[in-house]
Image 1 (cartoon, rainbow, N blue to C red):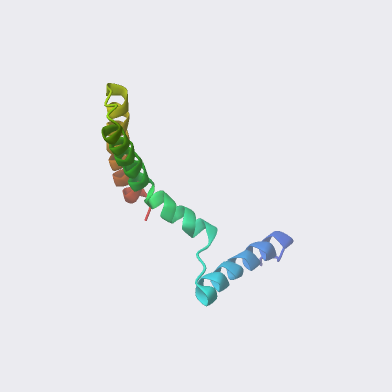
Image 2 (spheres, rainbow, N blue to C red):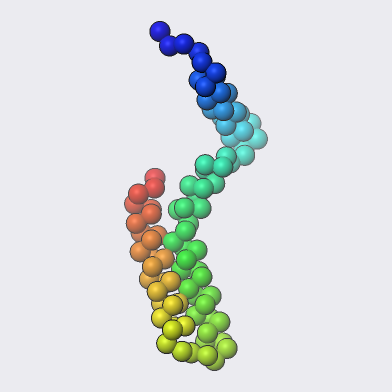
Length: 89
């Protein structure tokens, strides 16, 4: 028969508080926000690569390191997006 220790009571209270926040107020908890950010991390890296590429093109300073960095961000973000969305459900 399980005993109620202070640790179990604290875990139970935190669980019910999360349920209360989600269902009554529609507040997304910290863990849910991190999961959504992780799912969109690849897209954010792609967006950073595209913005860098736009800055490089519009300023007229098209050097190989700048173009390579922006290409690496776009390709790395695409690969990260595919892998992360297969792992995180």
